Length: 106
Length: 166
Image (tube, rainbow over all chains, first blue to last red):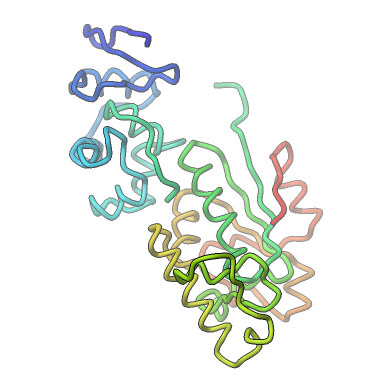
């Protein structure tokens, strides 16, 4: 298992760059990863999605929920979700929230 | 990034309920992973975008060698006999069974699923020859269909894309 330093904190990551221990995550890490992903500042709408995923991951074995679980769970529409996390929201949300890739196809 | 984004194109040629899902599931997965998606609907696949047909896609048990009674909890490899499959109501029965099974795995109905793809940025096109053959026009299609195009237009629209025929 590789480690890397994000926002001044050493964390464990897998070969795709996802954090492997959700407990090592903090908000500064989320902001730093969002920067790496080429996204601007994280707004309240972004945090609403990230917070939901963090909560949901407790019941999902540390994995990020699927996009449909996010839209039904947060009330954020599919369109908004793809604007907030452009070009691949499924992976992007998981990475920023410090969770594993979603398991599930919907 | 100067590199061009990965692009996947689906050709949907089937109008049965079971064959509507592959492009929806894989297209949705592609969008979630940041891959561009284009879908071309042709022949029976026109049912997937037809306002009149989209909510009424069916699956017939006749000659369907994979649809076993195991789906209904009957053990073993017992099939639905073809002779029984022709009984009125059997297509409706297997359709409702499949809809129930899809709902159990969290897959939304075709109309809603297709809308999710459109909202996620998928580009939908209808086949001109099929539209002419079936007497369909833009107003007959669900929201999200961009245009009625020829096969040649579709080739231009999907230059460099990976292609899947369903």
